[in-house]
Amino acid sequence: MLLFLPGLACDARIYAPQLAAFPDSRAVDGYGAADSLAEMARIALDQAPESFDLLGHSMGGRVALEVFRLARERVRRIALVSTGVHSLRAGEAAKREALQAVGWNHGFDKLIDTWLPPMVAEANRAKPEIYEPLRQMNIEAGQDVFDAQIHALLGRAEMESLLPQIACPALVMTGELDTWAPPAQHEAIAAAIANSELVIVPGAGHMIQLEAPEAVNAAIACWLERPA
Image (cartoon, rainbow, N blue to C red):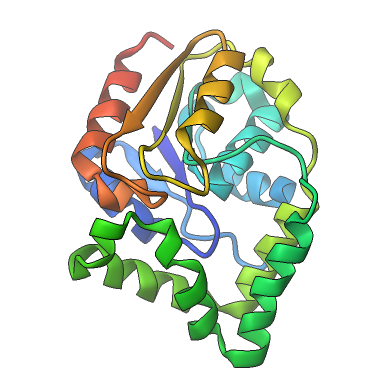
C-alpha cells in the first residue's frame, strides 16, 4: 500500500489525482488536533499496514521522516515532496506567528488568502479548477488545526541526520517554481540520501499534486517500480 501524508492545512483532497491513479493507496485525512510531528506520525502508522510505501508533501514530508524515525523497518520506499529537513531558522517563529495573528485578528479566510497565493505558481492561480478547491480545503481546516500544526512545526526535532540512514528507494521531488521549498533545497536532500532520485516538475509551485498531477503521477509510478 502507498500512504500519502498531507501538509499544513491540507487533508486527503490534496491527493485526489494520486488516489485516483493508484488504486492501492490511501491518504491520511488530516491529523485532527495533533500538535507535534511525532503525534502525526503515530496517527499515520495507525492507518498503515505492516509494510508500506510512504509519500509526504510539505509538512507531511517532515511527518514521513518522523514515521521513518519511529518505524523504519515498515517503510519500503519513501518520497519527500515539496518539503524541508532543516531545523528552525532565525526569524521563522516570528514569521509563522505573524501569519497566525492575521487569522486571529482578521479571520481565517484572510489568513488563507495571505498564505496560499505564493504557494501556487502564478499561472495556476488563475485556474479555478486548481485554485478554488485548494482554497476551500485550506479554509475548512480552520484556525485551531492551523495553530496546532504551526506548533508542531515550531517544535520539530532535528531531521537532517536521518537522511543518510535512509537505505530504501527514495523519491525527492518539488516544483520548478516552488519558492517555499525550492529545487536547490531538494538537491541537497537528494544528495544526502544514497538511494534517491531527484525530480523537478516544470511549471509547478508548492501545491504540486494538483498543479501538475500527470508529471507527479509519472514520477510516483517510476519510484514504485524500483525494487524495495
